[in-house]
Length: 183
Image (cartoon, rainbow, N blue to C red; front, side, top):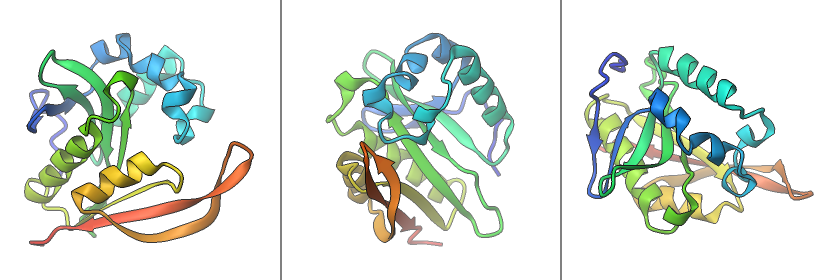
């Protein structure tokens, strides 16, 4: 379903493009993002050992999975890698997948790039991969992430009460989804 051999894959948006993560990205800012508590405060990966070697292994393993697209988010102007976005694993039977996103460059927060990146990948998933539904989740107090998904058309489908421990308190997990209007 996913063309993992296409190293030339480039999915264009207005200000951004998405492309496969490469070894140069691992040598860049990506490891520092994963070790910045402010960047990872809403990610479960904050509990992992995010050494360069572990990130390299993660990228190599995820790149081998034919049901996952793991892409760099790149600002066209300046060709700057600012974050990552993942689609998958794809459930081929149900034609669905989960989407996750990280904007690691803090100086790029609040510029609408998460919304654009989500929109680019949703469009690709619906038009090219012919998926029926995409889901996502976030901490209830991650208002920026929730807003980005909702701007693209995701709807809140439910909540898991007190699912995550955050700064000594429990917060809900918000479950979001979007259905392909032409599937």
